[in-house]
Amino acid sequence: MRIHEYLELDMDSQTISCSECDEELCDASQNYKEHSVLYARPIAEADPGFLPPTKVLQGASDIELRQFCCPNCATLFDSEVSPEDAEILHDVELDMEQLTSS
View 1 (cartoon, one colour):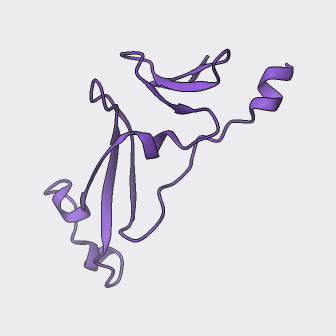
View 2 (cartoon, rainbow, N blue to C red):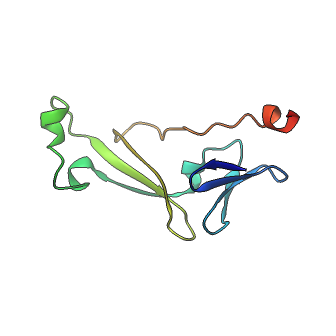
């Protein structure tokens, strides 16, 4: 079952995998981003077209761009912009009990 453009849920094993190469990432109850390759860098390095964070965010200079990729084929799963010390966003939370009872 597709749960994201590049993520698949295997209902039998209740695991999340890359839809491009079938690399198993984690259990369905876990945050796939924590099992992906993380490439984090200051937001100012993301693109020369970005305004400096201190100008846009009223002095905040600790903002980073985080990119999460498949550890096997390097497919980009997702990107997020966040303060450096913030936890990784858990944006795909699956209710396996609900999904298996359907």
